[in-house]
Image (cartoon, rainbow, N blue to C red; front, side):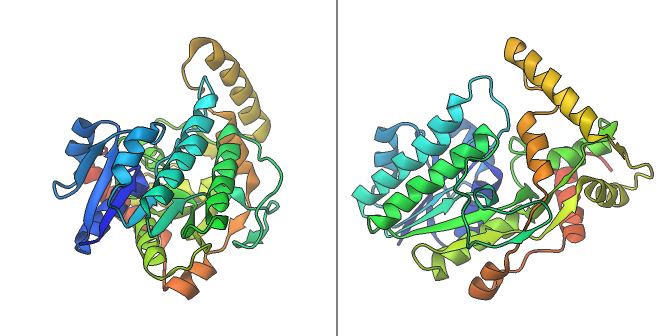
Length: 328
């Protein structure tokens, strides 16, 4: 039976890839830093391989005998006291995975990139046709741009690489990888006095995994697929969440100047304390981009269709309730 390797399997994307691969009857292995943690999260049918994408030896061992690799591991946070970790994990880890996969003769490599690598202005709709040649504004974005370029290098060497570009994630998955789920939890618990200005595009976690499997089965080498449902400003997101939770009062939106001030002060303090700032600069920066990714290529080529956002939020609330993250 064809063996498939998944990295980032304890994250929101990788977790759902593993589940859907197993549901499809595939033999699945996951490269995990902590087998003990992974054992509590992943289905028992998934083989756990101890290692790290930043460790070439463990990567080479993990890819041996695999025909397909889903590389969903990455460092998605918007702040770290030592920003070099973005390069080490997102860029170096991707290079290690690609090099080991090339040597092992992996037939297809599915690279989880991001919508951040594309060029578009505020309010503009964009597709997969134009990568942004200019460095983006945050460590995370720049590391993902560089990781994407590394994947292109191996594509040009003859590897079969397919690129997946998800937008802001929410939906079922491990509680340690909350994504936008944390917003739902914090709104329920009354921990958000004011909302940040701006917004972002969203996509349901199970839809991203389904898009990954469709791309692996039907995409061509070099294909890029944006996976996104739609763009929403944060006030609209909060209103939809509050409606589903039965919360009558939706927090107001803070002025942009206030968000920038809090972010700047918080980043300064964080550099001393080592604790994450209340509003990471990268998070505020991303929410001001306000460009709109279009997933028509994935819909036309793969038959992929995203779930409606309101229904996705309803299902996510049910999931969060089932795991005890929130109470109804």
